[in-house]
Length: 177
Ligand SMILES: [Zn+2]
Image (cartoon, rainbow, N blue to C red; front, top):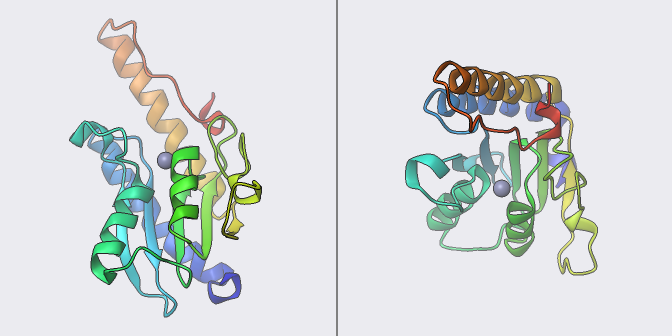
């Protein structure tokens, strides 16, 4: 699967995801977006964080994209597909991607605090992973990290201006100032 998505194509898709992530960031969600490509390179599922909007702890971009792609295909197996996402998947999403038999995962910024593909744990290498998933990080990592850092900085500023004491804390080490 890895060879089916070369560097230029991965960068192109990550640029699109960054624009989508920025849009959801403006709507108050943590700016993360994901897309699933089939073996022909067609997008079959898009997702962005919807946790705040839906009040749903499962509302991560990767899971939203997985649900959309599974509904489109009428299948839960994604061995021939690639998921791209702007931030390293968390442990919940990494486990879901293994369950979905995702062929390849490409991400932007690493997440040293919550990442499930090498950040804190690497579920893709766990003996519990019954499926081998090719993983590659670092595609437009600086841009993806900056988007998140800026978003959290702005949120803290807004919370401070409002006199709130519960300024959100960045879940990503890449976002720590
Ligand atoms: Zn997640």
